[in-house]
Image (cartoon, rainbow, N blue to C red; front, side, top):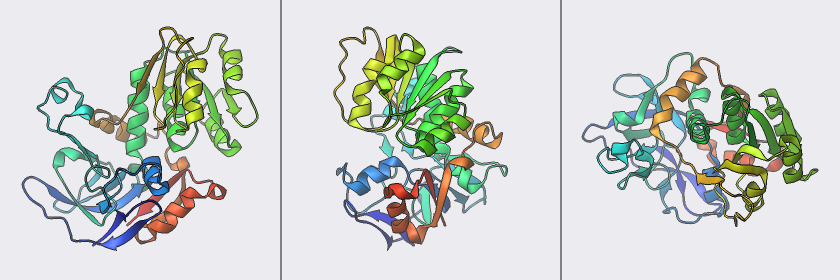
Length: 323
C-alpha cells in the first residue's frame, strides 16, 4: 500500500509499504482524508529532528472501518488506561502512551490498524474534509476549557493560521472578546469574520502596546499559536496580572516573568476527551472548519502538498489530503 514516510528534513516521500497486520482487538481503517498539521511541517523543515526515519506520519485523519463500513475519525493518542494519569482522566500524560504519527506510525497511509477506542464515529452531516479537522478543533476546545475565561473576558489569540482561527471561534463561543494577532491581512480578515473584535497586524503595529491599550490592564487570557520565539517572548507583557497564557505553537523562547506576578503559563496537547464534542460542534455547524480548507491533494501528491504549505505565496491554511 502507499504511505507517506519521513526520511529526514525536506525528505518526506510517498512509498510502497507493507499493509498493517490486524491482531488482537484492532480493526482495519481505510483512509479517506487527513490534514497537514504544523507539527508535520516542523519535521519537514528540519526544525525538529527527533522523529525516527522511516516513520509513517499523519495524526489528523478520518476513514472507514473495513469491518463495518462505519465512518470514523482516527484519534492518535494511545494510552494504557491504568496508570496514575489515565486513572485521573489525564491520558495525554500516560506513562506508556504513544502518539501515532510521531512516536509510532501514523495515518497517512491507505490502511491503518487501530483499536476501536481510537475511533470516533462520524455522522453523515460531517464531510470527510470536516472530519479531517477534528483533531485541531479538539485541541482548541481543550485549550479554552483549561483557560476557563469568564464571559466578557479579553482573549488574545496570537497567530491566525488554522489552529489560531479555531481558537478564535471557540473563544467567541465562550463569550470572550477576541483580539486576533497575525502578520497577514487575509488571515486577520477571516478572524474578523469569525468574531474577532480587534485585529492587529504584527508587522505594522506594536502588538504589546496595542493589546494593553485595548484591554486597559492586559489580556485576561492569551493563546500563543504562532510558534515563533518572538511571539512566545511577548506573552508575559500582554497578559494581565493573575491572567493565563497557553503556549500552543511549539516554539522555544525566554519568558521574562518579572511583571507577570501571578499569571499562569502552560503548554497544552490533545486529549481524547474533547473529540466527541468536536465532532458534535462540526456536525451542528457551530464551528466553521470548511472555511479553513484552502487546498486539497491526493495522498500520492503529498510531496506537492508539502511544498504548497511551505510557500507563503500559496496562502495555505488547512491543506487536506484525500485518498
